[in-house]
Image (cartoon, rainbow, N blue to C red; front, top):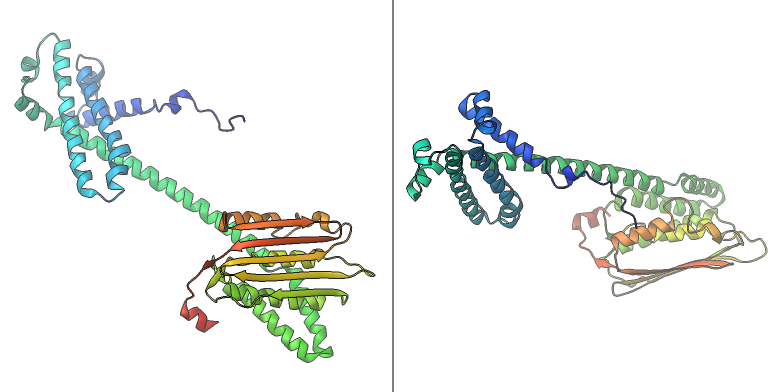
Length: 375
């Protein structure tokens, strides 16, 4: 498979831009320290002191990278603050001492020795006196700058990622609301109840109560990742009863729902609903042949078995998997996200029928007592 990622320039791939950055940093630092930009440039790039400047550039940079990519992930991010500070101090000391030989190299390039040029000798006391001044300041400044850049970069990336997640969440919620409030279903249900008011007031009253419960569930009870299975089943039953009102009289709907389950069993909202809606949407419209929908739900422990089948005409079942709304393909994608490796979905698309069988491993949820009181 060809690489779809854009190829980076070798200068960026190997992060060679870090070299001019540290050269520029060291120049600015030294110019501020000496108080003369010209003197700093001459000393660093146009005299034998370039060797000393090289040591001032390379070892603080190594200290920065060692801190960012080893000490911080290994100790600081794991809460081992004592060890982090201890090793960070060691890195600063090591970097400062490694800078000192640059003075000797520069003296050698100048044709003299470090004692005449800098007043330094090859002994520990001389190294210590030299390292505790400019080398320590340079290393600490470099580490501080590196951490500041890294923290700023991480903050910007976190903000961008947060904005992307919020945008994705908003788009998902808008799509979900469009699915929840299906105008076609709502208006047909209202019209069916309206005609029942004069024909059968008792049935109209019961249907209106079911319609109210259905809307309540959509608005208030399905906002969590998991809801009690009992609420999802109640929603399904109300939906089925309302759908019966607006279907042809020759449609036979058989519902077999096992009521023997614990109230502490949870399920993601609207997972089952899509399959039922799909059956009502694509059931056959035969005039001389039977039209039917069979819905079965059973629970063994936390293992849910859900089967929905419906009669289909010659052209009804062909577009079932790709029909509008949330769609069976999107439901399958949602199952992959919410229940990875915890479900089996079997879809049978036959000439005269369409059926799905879902086996789903549910989870126990803790129900907030205040929510139970409100319900």
